[in-house]
Every structure is written in structure tokens, then in C-alpha cells.
Image 1 (tube, rainbow, N blue to C red):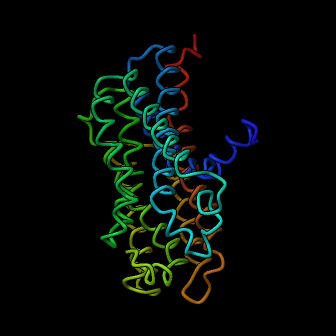
Image 2 (image 1 turned 90 degrees about the vertical axis):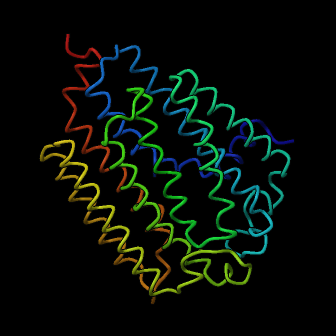
Length: 302
């Protein structure tokens, strides 16, 4: 019999819990900007941030669990994924389905306690983040749907804090994150290009090949960087932000130097490390930029 901790660990590995760092900092930077113009009390701020974190983790868990559940037959036929929890027999399909349902319920219920807007939008949001796993069965544009699904995070955090989308600020972060995620998902999918073709799974690498996929990924990351610049200009951020944005630009360059059509061995490094650093660096830049305003909001300055 597996202990409770072992079961939790198995589910954590299935959804790659540590990879929440890709989108969570974008939700955090959007929340930081929203908090800087909000009228919330320190207690309300703490509750909002807690609820945002719970929504982020539960929504991502539902999406990743659904991806593993619906793709388990494909995973079993792919040498790279054959040891994932369902094909390896570590978790049953029934238990994963229960996990998906419970994660979805936590997401929807938590959104209810944030505000009515978040609760109403939780249902289409849940549909979008689950739909990605289905989309690769019929369109090579699935990378953009994944980017869109994860790009919802900053918009959701903004609505959670201000209960409004009457500002264009979160739209910049949504677009930037969508380009960012789509670009590196294309790179990551290169690993499965041949098996995807064999199994009939759609992806840009499977359709266009290596060189065009690298080119498309570069264009998307250029668009992402340009959108992050535009976001800083629109919000009127100071030089702290642009210093950290410059670091992300260097990280993008390193990422595309690490991997090439002639050397795919460093794709996991580019995927798991550099992209995580990019999101964290941008978040830190925003926090430092708005540090005094946030401390004032949470009652640090009496």
C-alpha cells in the first residue's frame, strides 16, 4: 500500500508541479501592478493573493492531469513519455480522472470566493485550458492554444484584484505570455516530431520540420520581448523594469544559442530552466519597481 505522501508525490510528478513557475510569476506581476492601484485593505490583499495562488495551482493541475489522462495511449507509444504515471501503471486512469475533477472543483469554488466576475469566467477558462489537450488532434496551431491557456493567468490575477478588465494592462501580459509559451512549446515539441508524425499528432515541427520550427519560435520570442517592452511603456514603468527586461532578452538569446537543428540535446535545459528564469526575472523587475507602493498597501509603513 502506498502512503499518502507517496500518492501525493505521484500526482505532483504527473502534473509537474514545479513547472508552475512558468506562469505563476506572470500572475504575480499582474497582481502586483493591480495592487499598486487598488484600494484593498492589507487583510483583503493577503486573501486575494492566497486565492490567486490556489486558483493557479488547481487550474494547472486540472489541465496537466487532463493532458496525461487523454494522452495516455499516445504516451505509451512514445519512448520519451512511456514511463509517465498512467502508461507506467503508477496511477490508474480512474484515479487521475478523480484528480482532474477535484482540481477543477477547487479552481471554480476558490474563484467564487474571489469575486463574481472570476467565478463566472472560471467556466470558460476551465474549458480553454483543458481544450489544448484535444486541439493537437486536429490542428498544428495547438501551441498557440497552449500559450493562450497559460496567458489567461495575468488577466485572471488582474480581475481577481480589481474585479475589472476595463484596463489594457493585462492584455499586454496576456499577449506576451502567449508568444513566450508558444515559442518554447514549439522548441519542446521538436523532440517528438517524428513520433508525432507517426501517431498523427499535429504540431508545427511535425508539419513544417526543424528549420522552419526554429524560425517560427524565434519570431514568437521576438514578439514576446517586443510586447514586454510595450507593456512597460504603457504602464510607465521605470528603469528597474527595463534592466530586468534586458536580462530576459539575454536569456532568450542564450536559449536559441543552446538549441539548433544540429543539436537538440539541450532542449530540456532551454525548456525547464531558461524559460522559468525569464518569468521570474520579469516578476522580480515589477516587484522592485512597485516595491514601495506595495509595502504601503499591505500596511508595512505605518
